[in-house]
Structure formats: structure tokens, C-alpha cells
Length: 281
Image (cartoon, rainbow, N blue to C red; front, side, top):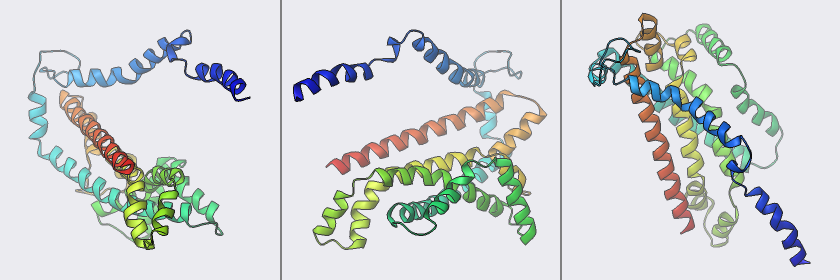
């Protein structure tokens, strides 16, 4: 019986293991997809080294626009504001999302659980402009005018669902046998949470924090709506630069942002691999 099952399952398993290039035309579409996805980014990086003032007229290789961007006081202020907003928003959003995920995933069945889950994830489906207008009206109604504080509060609000999803997914996929084993070995609830649950949950927390940070750094609409004087972030500043005309300086700033994003993804990969290794050991 087992041999028959093996014979019947082996071809099916082999069929699932077929490489992408086996399907006629799919390999070409895959290459086209990646070219369509990354070619504009490659062009942007290429022209960020353009010595010419005109964006699309190549005038030789140069780092002048990087030097100019790094010495631009307005860009430095915008980057500083973006880092403050993204860092503070990520800390609060990740903490709230972690608590919410623990309650919904480990809190058992309670009245309103499904509604609570829907309310947390609903902002992912709501158009960003609607959220921006709602937050702006709310701040105006209560007379809140904290400048950069308004932007941070708004970012915490819409970053929570993005941090919540990876953390909850990690909790749903965690093996609870290690926590049960810790309890069998007379560990207290706090010790089990501190030394077993949190390390196992850490990849989800890191992923949620990274996603919230990138979303906050990249946000434009909500920041433009609720931000006041002196709270200009980098996306808003780049938009104001584009309105005055395209220069290679914008390409240089965008390239630096891309490198920062790659560094964040690399850091996440290193942390997740280290966490998995520690968990295995």
C-alpha cells in the first residue's frame, strides 16, 4: 500500500517541483516582469551620477549632485524630520500591534474578536486620502496643532495594521509545544513569555517594525495633509523640488533612499537568520 502511494505521489511531487522555465513562455514573461520592475530604478541610479544639470542629457560621470544633496540644509532638515517621524511611529505602532496580535491570537475566543480583527486590518483597505482627510478633520476639531507631533500621531495610526499583519502571522504559525515544555519545566508565565515566546516572535516583530518604518518614511499624502510649518519630511520636500523642475539632485536623494531600504532589508535578513539559528540551537 505504501509502495503504491509512493509510486502515485512521486510523479505528482515531481510535477510540483518543475522549474519555471519548463512552462513555455513563462520564463520570458518572468524576465520581462523583472525588467519592467527594475529598469526605471536602474535608469534613476545611472542618471544620479550625471554631471550635467539636465536630468536626461548625459554629461559625464560625477558625484557633484550627491555632494550638493548632502550639503543642502533643507534636505538635511527633511531627512531628520523623516527619521524622527518614522522611528517614533515605528516604536509606538509596533508595540501596539504586538499587544493587539497577542490578544487576538492568544486571548482565546471572546466576544467581538472577529470585529476587532476586522477593525485593525480595515485601514489597509481604506484609501489613504480618506484616512488623511479624517485625521485632518479630527485634529482640527480638537484643536491639535503640534507640528511634527501631528504627523507622528497620524503615522502611528496608519502604521499599526502594517506592523500587525506580520506579527499575527508569526504568532499563528508558532509551535506552542516549546512554551508548553517551558511551563512543564516550572517556568512562570512571565519567564515563558520572556525567554520563549518573545524570541520566537522576534522575526515577526522585526518584520512588522521594518514594514512600518518603510511605510512611514515613504508616506506623502497624510504627511502633506496634517503636517504644519517646520514638519516637512523628505517625500514632501522631494515633491516640492519636482514642482520647481527635475535635477540630478533628486536622483541622488532617491538613490540614497534606495540604499537605505536595501540596508534595512539586509539587516532584517541577518536578524531573522540569527534568530532562526538561535531557535534551532
